[in-house]
Image (cartoon, rainbow, N blue to C red; front, side):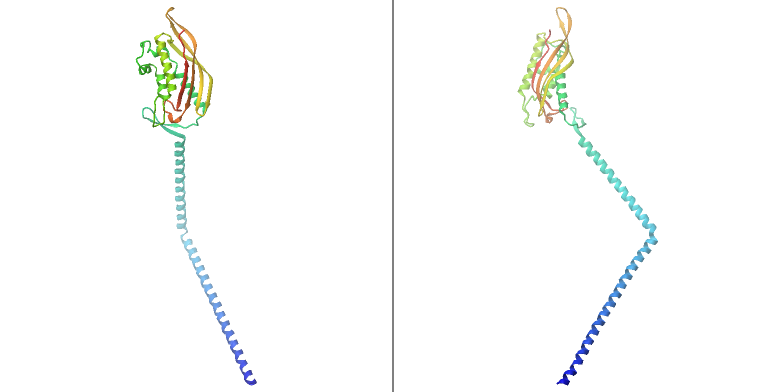
Amino acid sequence: MGLFDFGKKPENTQNSANTENSVDTKNNINSENKKTQNNINSHKEESLSWKCEQFFGRNWKYVAVFVGVTTLINTYETKSIVEEIEQLKMVVTENNSKVVLTTSDGRAIKVTKEPLKAEYLKQFAVSTLINNFIISRSQLTNNFNVVSFKNTEEFFQNAPTLRNIYKNFIDNKDDKSKGIKANKQALGDLNAYILWLTSAVAQNKLPEYMLMKDYSINKYEYTQNKFNTEIVIKVAVQSFNIIENKYIPAVSEFKIYAEGSFDLAKSNDANPYGLRIERLKINPIVKA
C-alpha cells in the first residue's frame, strides 16, 4: 500500500503543471491579439488623419472659397434680418405712437398720441366756454336783417357756435347703443340762454357789437374726470343809443359758470377730449 501511494503522487503533480502551462499560453495569445488589434486601430486612425491632411492640403483653395462664400452669405442674411427687425420696430413704434382718426368729410388722418394731462383738459374746457357763448346782436340778426326766429333751427343758423355746443358738447338725446341719456339739466340751461337772447333782440337789450378782450378764471376744480369752473370775460361793447344816434363804447363783464366731465368714448373731431357740459349758468351783457 505504501508503494502504491507514493506512485500516485507524481502523476497529480504533472497534471497540475500541464494545466498551468496551458493557461499561461492562452493568456499570452490573448495579449498578443490585443496588441495586434490596437496596432491595427492605431494604423487606421493614422491613415484617416493622413488622408484628411492630404485632402485639405490639396484642396485648401476650394475650402477657403467655400468658407468665404458661406461667411458672406451668413453676413448678408444676418444684415437682412437685422434690417427687417428695425423696420418692424419702426412700424410698431409708429402704430403705438399715433392713432388713426376719421374726419367729418371721411378722410383718415394720423394723430400723434400724447399723455392726457389735466392741464390740457383745463385749457380745452376754458377755450370752449369763452369762444362759443358771446353773441352780439349784429351776429344773431345777420347784420340786423332778422327780427325774430320761428324755431330753434333758424336760431342756430345765425348762432353756429351755440349749435356747436348743442351738437358736440351736450348729451342732447338718448342713445341706448352707447348707453347715453339726454342731459335734461344741460339742455334746460342752454335753452334758457337761447330764450334770453331771443327776448333781448326783441326788446333791444342785446349790444350790437361785442369783442372779447381778456378773461380770468375765478375757479377751476377737477376731480375724477369731472370739473367745475367760473370764468369772467372782459368784453369790448358797442351799443347804439337811439336818443344820441350813435354807438357808445364800453367794457363789460360776461360771466360763465359751468360743470361738466370728460369722456374719451364721446370724442369726435370737434370735441377730441369728449367734453360734456352738464350744468350751465350765464350772466350775459345787457345793453346800457
